[in-house]
Amino acid sequence: MKSNDSTALEQEVNEMAYKCFLHGLNVATLVQCIRVCRDSIMEQMNYDAATFVSSEAEQLELLREQFAFYQAMDQLIAQVVSIYNEEKQRENTRTSVEKAQGEQFAVLAEQELVQLVLHSSDIAVLMIDRSLKIIEANHALCHLFGVKREQIIGKNIDEAFLPHESERFVQWVVERGQSGHYMAEYNSKWTTVSTSPIFYMGEMWGAIAVLRNITENKRYEEELNKREALAAVGQLAAGMAHEIRNPLTSIKGFIQLLREQGNSARSESYFSVILTEIERIDGLLNDVLVLARYRDDKIVSERFLVLDELYGVIRLLEPEANRRGIKLELDITPGEWYVFGYRSRIKQAILNIMKNAFEALLTQGSVVRVTVYASISQVVIVVEDNGPGLSPACLENLFVPFYTTKQEGTGLGLSTTQRIIADHGGEIFAENSPRLNGARFEIRLPLSVAART
Image (tube, rainbow, N blue to C red; front, side, top):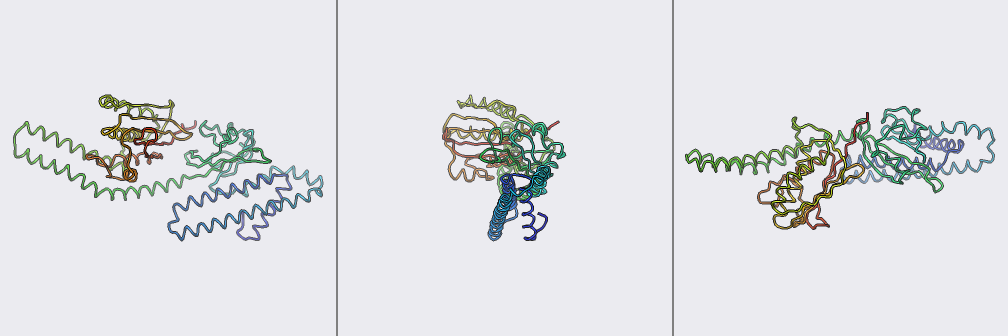
């Protein structure tokens, strides 16, 4: 709306409802658009609240504002329907000339109406009918996709945008009856996509998609992550000092012995211990650098097949599995699933999870099962075993740096793995396996779609 004055706002609503009736537009479609607009604004308010609302008082104030907003929107809808019905009662008095003029300007009125209701700088709206023809696309959507509105209105959506099969979100509403919420990348812009059907007289009339550009939000999140990384380094410093001091003390002691003794046979064993402790320090430092989101210039991000790295880890661990009598059960759905990021880091994360499963079987169990499949936008890797499982205390502290239940463990393996997965936009979950009764780890990574040419 152009004005915040309540009287002016009411007048604009009256004019809008009158145009809707005059030009033969469907009031159900108008009400649906208003509701979609309301829900999109509420979604944005809740999203911003996660960042800016910190106290209970601010949360209470937000709830009050949201309640008032809902009341205002309900009154708006009731008013539109009421005006529409009043004009409906006068329908018999309309002249044939007025009806002809209404039909002549119906398309123009529809465009103005949708743009008025859904006007927003960051919310894009796309509407299609049952034949997948584009009925409406606002200016925000055209800007997002870099197209002109007059070039796509009336065209089949698949012909207009040439979407990848995994990104036909709004089409799925018509074809499968599947609505939902997704995340996609368009023209280097991260975007959330919400889709839902439009019903009229009990039948599906078409579908609507609401797209929101969250690129700036992701940049803000990255800035927060940098600050978080600095805080994480500070928290790790105390633990690192203790962990590094122990191997350094051993190295110092053996070097002193080597200086006092000239026995070459004993020196060889001392050298072996020194080398082992130095490698332990190197591994600790590497894990800390990953936890601090350090980026090695020698490691290049790329688009790669995640199954290649998984099979590489399996080949690496197969000799140990054969030697210890561990049965590797593989249930891997074939597919070319690409992930964008650091190939070696993902391989390290998978290796950490599988090594944990192998180590759990030292006291109990002999089966490690690896399951891989893909959803619409993610590849899912599940590793589970029939070992002793995870205790409640272990589940609570599993990803806390330096928490470990192993005598020789550093407690950085799983926290490092969690950081790697998070850096790639994924998630990792841990629980006890309902199938094997041991531990179950689930990794979810976003699929990378090839750039359009």
